[in-house]
Structures are given as structure tokens and as C-alpha cells.
Length: 495
Ligand SMILES: Cc1cc2c(cc1C)[n+](S(=O)(=O)[O-])c1c(=O)[nH]c(=O)nc-1n2C[C@H](O)[C@H](O)[C@H](O)COP(=O)(O)O
Image 1 (cartoon, helix red, strand yellow):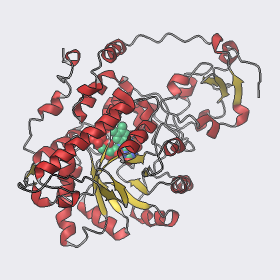
Image 2 (cartoon, rainbow, N blue to C red):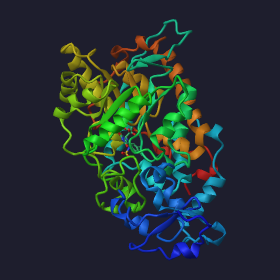
Image 3 (cartoon, rainbow, N blue to C red):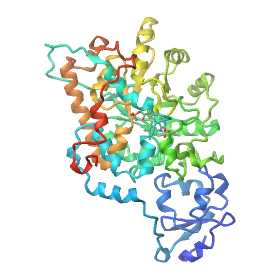
Image 4 (tube, rainbow, N blue to C red):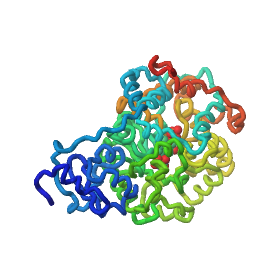
């Protein structure tokens, strides 16, 4: 262990695969031996060999990554940062426009719905972050369909019902919640906000909303759990690793740390082709959570490919009973997309399914969760299976009226992804807090206007789903399209 302060000249000597040191937060690390093991490949590290890599390291890696995975003997000591010169970055024309947008950012109070956050986030986020969060697979048809499918379902409201008192509370997998939505798992939270997923944890605590912790979080799993308030419920989202011992360790640790349910993601044996993400040639690394995978990766495929090589594409129905042997947590399959698989899920005895296409990021032209739900529930009822498991949906939920439609059709609750990422990226914790409060205000109004004082009063007679499968009836989705030219601030009107 070297004790005296290291200078940048000394570190600059270690700038090759033969001897590779990097500076992270004012400390020098010898990562030579780690190069071949790095999930993101060696190229990205060699780009910063002999230099300060802190800025690129932070959005992707939990802070405890080096302590957890790099032997102490490779921690070379403190650096005299006065000797480190910050390299002038090539001026990115988009960056100066982004800085201008940040300066003209609308006040948080000017965001009246979840799409307003998207409009602001699009203009103030770094392009790599926007590309990763916003992208869908291929032509992004399912990405758009997830939102527009809700516009093909119409309400059949009841009148003259006493709706003075509205109770939005319910339970999801046994957890009492104040409103039937949860923060779904979305990877790489630090791309959008330097604190990452813990911002979502804090907002969820304030609103008594469940948070699903992603396998591919930027924050360390324990950091997210430590940020939880005592009565707050967290679930774990799991990408199953080819190395089942790693998966077993992650699941057992999550249960020890108090997670209440395990959501096994089943729609991503390979991550989809998200071309916006690929275009920005994401050249950062994956997270440390699965850092023992190590296969060399094709880094030109954007963040998605860079962080998912460990996922086991051989996972199949025969593997599901094994999970019962390693945990007592509730088990839910996330990413089921047809009623036949919901029936199989009943047969293997899981506690729930999420009808989801991964936010349109996987198989393009897969149907929306709400359309699958509308087709599934009548079949389950006919077979007497509708109470066998809890059904959730996610994808494209941007209004409380979308939540109400899902509950009328039999969902227990809904997952929301991008809107909270955009609110966090544009306004931090206050943004996510406002987004959740807006949904609560909308939910109370919607329940009052549909004639349902409590969640139990919502049922399928209150919706008309005849058009939901008729994809040829495009609704002029002005607001969502208009979200890209919002009226919320002249500065953001399209030029
Ligand atoms: C937006 C987003 C979604 C991701 C997501 C990352 C982002 C940025 N990631 S991903 O990198 O692998 O694709 C995950 C993930 O880690 N695991 C997962 O199960 N779903 C992942 N999803 C899907 C997510 O859980 C929901 O299914 C989806 O976000 C719901 O759609 P909305 O965004 O429209 O609410």
C-alpha cells in the first residue's frame, strides 16, 4: 500500500494494458488484472488508463464497487489532485443547448401531469441518459402502443353514488399501499440523477408506494435498502444469472434485507435493440451487481448490451420451482404477454404476474399490458383462476385514468417507470414527489367521477373495451405528442 500522495505524472505512467491505474474520487487503483474480468470490457477502462475516470465511473457503479470487488492490494493510495489537470472535453453543440435549457427550465409547479416531466427531461438530460431511458426497441411501435392502447378504452361512469369519501388504499402482495401503483424496476438510475435510485426510494417512502429495486441499479442494493423507511415495502427485480449461485446469493441477501417479493423478469432473455441508446455509442460499463460475468461485450450496442451479458437465456418454466426452494418471498413473473402463460403461471404456483412488454424495450409489436389484461381476465374467470394470483400491468401508464382502467379490468396494481425517471432527472426528489402527488390527485378525482368510493368498487362494467384490440383506430394523442412542444414555457416551444 503506497502511503505518500501520488502525483498525476506517476499515475500517467500506468496507462496501458500492461499496467493500468485509474483515479476515482481522488484515489488511485491498479485495475490491470481486473481488465479481462470487467463486464463492460477492457476498452472503456483503457480509455481512462493513467487518468481521472471519476466522471464516467459514477453514473454506472455503486459507490462500494471498488471496495467490494477490487483487492485491497490494488488500492494504491491518495492522489494529490492539485497535480491532476482536467482534460478539456470536445465541445458538444448539443451540450450548450442543453445548458441553455437547464437555465430556462420551467418551475416545478408548471408541471401539471407526468408528460410535462417527459417534455422537460428530454431537453435537460444528457443525451446518453435520455437515449437510454426513452428508447424502445426497433421502431418503438410497442413503446407508443403502450400509451395509446389506454385511449381505446372508454369509461362507463356511474352517477348518483355517494363519493364524498374516496379511499384509494389497497394491498399488493399483502403490502398495504396508499394508491395502487408502484415504482417499477428501471436500470441505471444515476444516468439521470447523481444520487440514482435512492431518490425514488425517498419519494416512495413519502407516498407509501412500493419500490421495485432493479438488478441493474446504479446504487448498491444495500444503499437502496438502507435509504428505506422502516414501514416502507421494497420488492426485488431479478435478471436470472447464468451462474445460479450468484442468483441464489442475491435472492437470499434481498430476503435477509427485508424485500417482500421477488419479481423474476422473464421477457428479456436478451435485451432488445434500442437504437437511440445504440446511436449514442454508450461506452460506459455495467453495474457491479453481476460483476463476475466478465464475458467480453460488444460495446457498440449501447448501455443495454453493455450491462446484460450475464442474463441466462436458457431460463424456462422448469426452473421456476427452484426459486421456491431458495426464498420465502412472494414470487412474481414480470413480462408475461399472453393468457396461456398466465395459466401456466397459475399451474407453477407463483403469486403473481406482471403483464408487461418491458416498456416497449424488448419485442417490438408485442401487445400492451392493458390489452393483454382485457383478453386475460375473462378467460381466468371462466376457468375459476382469477383469484389464483395477483395480476399487475405496466407500460405507458401516464394518467390515473390509466390506473383506474387497469383496476376495473382486474389488475391489483400498476408499475410506472419512465415518468418517475424523468421527474427525477429533471427535478430530483421534489420532481418525483410532485409526480406521485399529481397521480394521487388525479386518482381521487377519477374515482369520484366514475362513481367508485373505494378500489373494491371498480369493476369491468365501468369500462368499454370493445375497441382495445382494434389497432386501426388511432386516437389523435395530441397531449402526449404535444409533450414534445409543451406550452409550459415559451423557451421550450419548438423553434
Ligand atoms: C424505462 C426503463 C425500463 C426498464 C429498464 C430501464 C429503463 C430505462 N430496465 S432495462 O434497462 O433492463 O431495460 C429494466 C430492468 O433492468 N429490469 C426490468 O425488469 N425491467 C426494466 N425496464 C422495464 C420497466 O420495468 C417497465 O416494464 C417499463 O418501464 C414500464 O413502462 P413505462 O416506462 O412506460 O412506465
